[in-house]
Image (cartoon, rainbow, N blue to C red; front, top):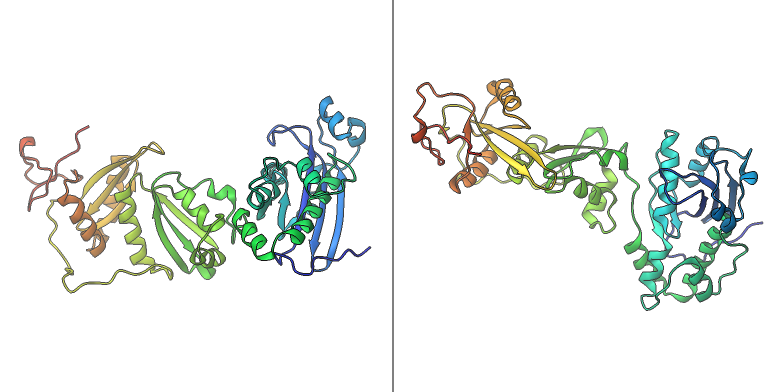
Length: 399
C-alpha cells in the first residue's frame, strides 16, 4: 500500500531509516542477525527486512533481548548473499539510525569483508534529539517512544525499531519549525560520501601529521593544493566534514583524486606546497604575485645542496629536506635517500622564487642546515657556521 511522504520535508534527499540486530557489540568480532530498512522519498515509503545467518552462535542474553534465536537464523541467507542487493537499496540515500555509528560500523565492516565500499552520509537520531531538545536528559529509543508517543509494533527487532525512527521523523516535522529542523539536521549530519574513487579506507592511509595534499578533478585537472599539521584530518574535513564551508563544499563536489606527501614538519610543508602550487596552478589556489623587488635569480651561498631535518612529534616522523640553488628537491626519511634525490634532480635545479623567499626567512632566523656535497676545500669544523655566508658550507646538525 502506498504511504505518502511529507508535504514539506526538511531535506529533499531519499532517506533510509535503518536498524540492525547483532550477535554482540563489536563489529570486528560479531555479526548481523537482522536488518530492517524503511525507505522514504518522493515516491513514498517502503519497508524491507530479513533475518541473516551470522555463522556464529547468538549469546543467550541477546536471544532473550531480541527474541532472535539460533534456530531462527539457521538456514537464513548470509550477509554475503544479500550484500549487492542491500547496497543497491541503501546507496545514494541519507543513512538515518539511532546511535548511527554502531549500525554504520557494522554494515561498513560486513560490506568490506565481501569487497564492497559503504560510505553513506549519516544522521544519528540520538544526536539530532540532543540538538533539538537540549533540556531533556534521556535520548534513547525508549525515551523517544515515551516522549513523542511513538507506537512500537515490537522492540529490539530491526524493522520495528527502524519504523520508530520514521515515526520520530514525522513527529519532528509536526513540532519543530522546518527551518530550525533543517539547520539542526545540517549541523548533526556526518558526511562520509566521498567523490571519485576516494573512500574512508583510502583516507586512513594519509599522513596523520605534517604534510601537503593536492585535489584533482575531472580529467585530472588540479583543483587545490594545501598543507596541514594533520593532513589526514584536514583532507577528511574537506571531503566529509560535518561543517564544511561553502568553498569546501564546491571543491568536494569536484574532487576525483587526491595525492599527499608527509613532510615531518611545517617548513617542509611550506616548501612542498609552494612548489606544487607553482607547478600545478590549481584553480582554487590564489597564485602568488611577483613583486617588482622579487629577484629572477640569486646567488647560491653554498658549495652544493643542503639539507635540514624536521621531526613531527605527533606522528613521530623524522624527515630530511634538501634544497639546491634555491630549488626545493624534496624530503626523505634518511640522508642516504636525500642524497639520491639530490643526484637525480641535480640537472633540474632551477631558481624557485617561493623557495628563495621561504628559505631566506628561515635561514635569517637561524635554521640549521648541513651540506650534502662536500666543498672543494673543506673548512675546519670550528669555522662551520649556522648562518650561511658566501662561499661557505652551512653547519651540520648537532644531535
